[in-house]
Length: 398
Image (cartoon, rainbow, N blue to C red; front, top):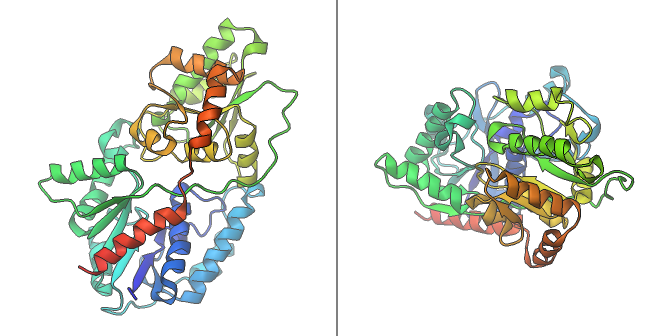
């Protein structure tokens, strides 16, 4: 059987965190999926927080994965980070051991962790004498540097240069991301490695009852980090306009769930200081899986007006529980949502307003989407892993 090593550097770097990020969940899904596919032929490795690369003792790795699952499931009541003293036993148990030369066929990495250090990647590939399969989630900092943190474009270019030079094959989360990656590599005069698109599996949403908001006005939900490319500004200006022009009883609520990101002065000023929005907009910066399930199941619709995305997980999560979606008309969103959502240009304010008010009232547009939704099927991890395993096997046979 093919000998596979999964780099779980990202998960180990999150040893003090209670709540997972999207990339954390992907790395966990690969740990579980590759265990099912390869069993004892799967090993775990990492670049430890101390800087050492090596294999993680299998019992320690499996115990840590179980610990993370428990921690994530109970994250609703926990804020901030674990203390360093509390995390120290795990940091010690997860200290890497030596990796033997020639002991693996394929090394898999699905997070961007340390990809901006090509020398580290070369060293670990040399230690393993393995081919390299990695995942690319998006090229947004390169294609839209105005939406990245300062220096983000240069950092991501270093990551993609590592992929272009060292990857034997690449998994991407959408055909849109794959096209962006191939275009970027070809633009450097290089031949792209084999690229396989596999939609990320939809996280199972707990069977929680919707929030008990029967006496309150209906609400629409915006889910994701508050950052410029998510286009929260459009939504807040629309709600401010509705507050000025419509009777209060006709205005739905907007619930914004996500931590505050960067380069967001206008959005944060509106959230913090606009009195017209106070009765209608609620901001939730931290939300566990149970609360998220209640918000999703109780919403009249999810709104996702992003200018660009690599995937669009909130769309899949909403549709999977029968909540309609209004989304920006971009390629990644259409890959996830298919024909089910109502799509609007991210700059079409009147179009968004009309769709929002229709869904708030469960009008004709809302009812039509509920019908279309019956033909939508959620992307799942077994289908994703089938594509990933085939790519790994093809790579091993080179």
